[in-house]
Image (cartoon, rainbow, N blue to C red):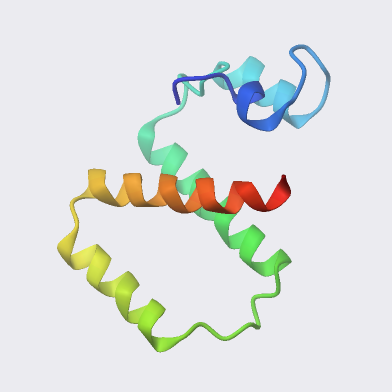
Length: 95
């Protein structure tokens, strides 16, 4: 993370709450947690978001198959870049 979490969340610096606590504990750029912990946290957030959006929505076979091929064919760094692109597309929904 190159920018502090407040940049991404719009959370004012120093305002109390979970984001403030994370920033104090892990650093503004999450520099005090491991890459493995960041990936785990991302997976948990994605799972929670999926449930909130209605996880009963069917996932097409093509999308499911693509996920398997992505794991097999793309390097981990390319997978992270793909995740970043998907996250950026989801972010636009809030604007």
